[in-house]
Amino acid sequence: MDIITVFLFSYLSGSIPFGLILTKIFIKVDVRKIGSGNIGATNVFRTGNKLLATSTLILDVIKGYIPVILAMKFFPDLIQLSCLMAFLGHIFPIWIKFKGGKGVATYLGILFALSIQLGFLFIFTWSVITLIFRYSSVSSIFSTLTVFVVTFIKNNTLKIINPNTNFGENINILLFFFFILIVYTHRKNILNLKNKTEKKIKI
Image (cartoon, rainbow, N blue to C red; front, side, top):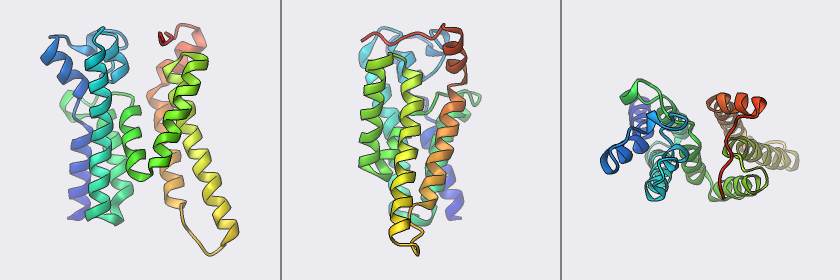
């Protein structure tokens, strides 16, 4: 019963398409019909409404953060399931025929729930890579990889110090899986980068 509860509330939280809801309510636009067709904050920004884009970003972070925090408090043995389902909810939301966003903001919310340090590591890396290359997709993929690598090295260093500890093995697997999913959701961007048609962020 606990597994079903965590599965449902995490997935349903992650599946709320805030970008689509906000643009339809406030500017009467279907964000899926502009730009990349994505429901995330980056595409909402292409409507020209920075407030809605910022609001989408914050809400998408929150919808990843809340279910994981609740799982930590009430279902500590099912934290990984909560993380995964919140993320998958955003990518495959049942409300819009399983065609959701790329999951970066929701992933950030999950990171903050797991570790504030990892959340800020992602933000720092994303910001630096964006300033250098101006591609949101490159920043997202590289930052997700950085979080995994740093966590993997840290946890394996602790294991060398104390061989009897199993600390971090589950989080390593989870973060690696998130990296694979982030690459998957950015597959079109990767193709655009290869073809030199990817749009840069205007800073």
